[in-house]
Image 1 (cartoon, helix red, strand yellow):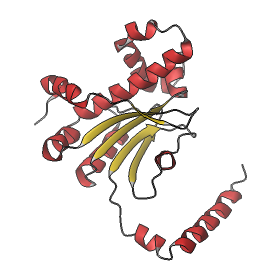
Image 2 (cartoon, one colour):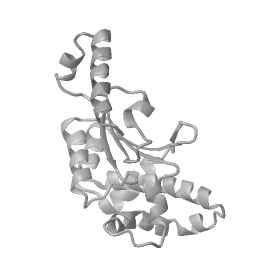
Image 3 (cartoon, one colour):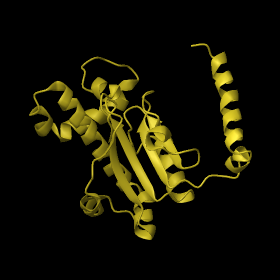
Length: 208
């Protein structure tokens, strides 16, 4: 890749934006008021705003390998806190994608060095749903199902946080689990039973 092309692209992008709206960057500089927090995978094929048809300022975005929400990940927890408490988003989305390299890597026996503790979180998801997953004979379909289950478990991890629990009580914030199908471009709503998860979590993870 010729990186000088990036700067040429940037100049063209600025020109195009100003052609459509002479005050575009003035408005952009006035601050942000996003409706949703999008937690997605770092995969270079998953472009968060583009796949949702949103523009700058409409989504607060956090990405990491395999769209994880870990309580000991200071980066992810800071993003959640800032988006929910300070930006006051109304929706939090965890979006995985089929053919996720992180999910597949987690199920290999190879030593992946510094990635090992991160991918262990996905192995924990497999352990929780081992019976269902082991019953799926097709390896690709098994990985696809693990992608979906991983999204659901990360939604559960979100609902465990104090910031999200407080926002649920005070203003009815919603947590959603989606999957992006790279092969078709479709966004799939997993239609997670939010209320059911919330009741289970309140029994064990309730925070005042």
